[in-house]
Length: 576
Image 1 (spheres, rainbow, N blue to C red):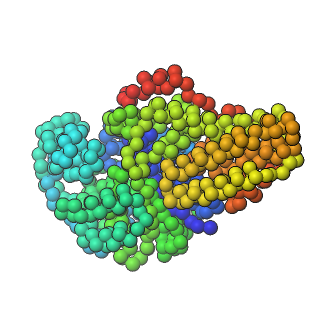
Image 2 (tube, rainbow, N blue to C red; image 1 turned 60 degrees about the vertical axis):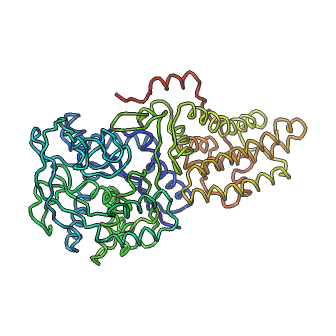
Image 3 (cartoon, rainbow, N blue to C red; image 1 turned 30 degrees about the horizontal axis):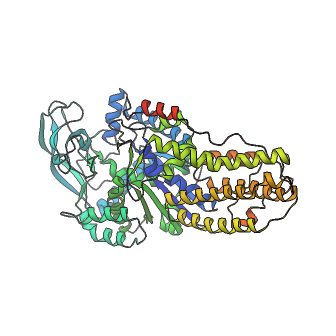
């Protein structure tokens, strides 16, 4: 039994996320976690809300609530939506937790003692009208790289280029819109990433199996221009992990907190400790996932994220862990594989939380159950390039893949058996050449499906799963037990018995993609046998003669043209 640690990029607390966020990290991570559990492996699947930094402060101010109250409220909103999409987190934590504060300060202290944090005086925008320094996201302006006029002071949402506020053209305050800004001197802590450049390079280049998207982004940040630079890790904010604390190897950082991108990845570890706290586990129970000196040496750690998060997870967070591990005390597990995704676009434009563009997660669940969305998003995951959501494509995929192929198979065989043999697996007959050919095809396709799932090739896995469904339909159409029954009821019984067992097998194989439909199918078949097949022939004999079942309700309904047209109008791309 292997051990898999899986994390998905932790979403900002500032509002409900759109479908592009979902397919870019949480949903494929859930797919992989469900698959590994189905194979009998031990899984720790962790996510959290990212609650610090300017996004939280700005959103709370807009909502007219204290930031702590706002974060508590929105954490539960996001957790409920995650449950709605059946995201199977072992724990959904909070970066504002005591665990994360303690761990972040511990790592900062260790880095400081290793000489890897430096104090640096810098000139920072001060808003005369707002009466305060303005950290990165409190500044907006025009991106010097692509000309996007709503770029933030830390990163351009349009081209993903990492920025400093002083890089922006025509900067203004995100609080008041004021352009009455002055550059004033202030002091901050910097992580000396530059001194770890070759360590990071060696680590990245050792990952020969990473996606090209991941390594190309990482090496671009490492080498382009002046190469990897030291990074400021404190901000002038009230909400966050305090940068001045007992035992800190520096002074004068009162009123400053750690930069959200410093403490947010540490929350992956802290959330696992939160899991232990919530489940009355010992310290060793979470440490065995994260500390290689406490048993994490046999863990395979996989991260899932959108491409805009790759620089922080291939450079900054690794720099933190490399530096802390140098100290020789606790040794922290570093990621083995980073699965990164391109962007999912919407109807000819971009999804955008900040601009309110696209279908959001709560809206999606108000229209259709989660399996419909899970299937479309995963089968169209933006892996090798950006992909685009259109209502026409969504309708076609749901109707053809889910309703016509899988749903139709389950409906036809259960209704046929009920009408001719009753609601129990019939006896009689033997398998012949047609069944042998089906078993051979399914054996080959199962191997391909497993290979794609192991390699995190999401779209290819979905395509192979659909082909497995199609094989069953083709068998049923070719065997035609409804015709055979007229002349050879025993042979029709053998064909029906195989097809009902194939229904159970489909539920087991499809569960990582569409868990609700699979649970409903297994319930109708009155079985809790979710064993992953190691031999197709044996898997098609799991349900014995006489095993009772119920004819399930329609698994997937078709989307009508009128519905699709209505949704296109209702969700034209702007959320008010």
